[in-house]
Image (cartoon, rainbow, N blue to C red; front, top):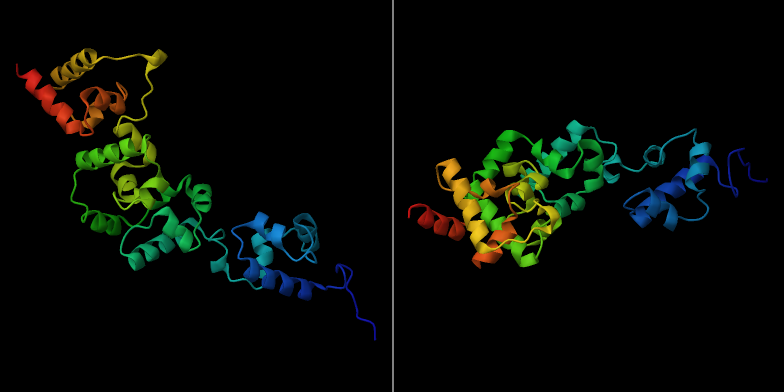
Amino acid sequence: MDKIIDKNSKAGINDKELLDLIKSEFYRIKPKGCIEFFKKRDKRIPCYPKLQNRFNGLTYNQILIKAGVESEKLNCIRMSKEKLINKLAQIAEELGHIPNTNEMKDYKILPEVLKKKFGSAENALKKLDKNYSLRKLAEVKESNEELLQKYIEFSLKLGHPASTDELDRSNEIYNASVFVIRFGGMMELKKAAGFDFVEPNNRKWNKGEIERLLLKIRHEKGERLVIRDMAGVINTATVLKFYKTTKISEVFDEIESRFKM
């Protein structure tokens, strides 16, 4: 007897056989997303638009779930915000620290998904259970000022403000999540470190001008300078270059000695 082919089938594959093939191909390819799956798929599987049409407009992930793929394997795309945060907390408990972006990927949580749900991976980390975050941060003994100094020194080694990935990959410094929670995000960290300031009209400084500027800020403040005092005024890297040091505390020590003269 000839094989019965349903009206939606292609090349003799009915819906059940097609879904079984999709599931099999998904586990074979282990794709990071929709594009990779359709690029490497068995060509008996129709292209995405035709597949959507065949399954009444279902999305890529809905089709995978219909095919029997476990939702946990779908890079957490279908998870609600609450479930994602709970998942991050579980990962943190298992690792013993707040996960960095590379560790998130190991657990099938892509930064792109967090960006879509929360605006950024940093925002998602900030929403982790506060008690957990504070408990783990208690292990970081440095003050915010000391953490800024570490970030500045590390960035100067790189020759540019260190990114989230660069912090996470390095064994010389805390991972990005520590800085994100302490300072509210990477942009806020760079601003606090004075790395976000662009000199207007490519202004050229000399050490005398920088010293007078810092003394003026010190006088107006009425107490010892901290790194944040330079934010929006002068680029930290510019100051460090003229004082020939990577430690901003040494610059402030010199300003203090000048201020008391």
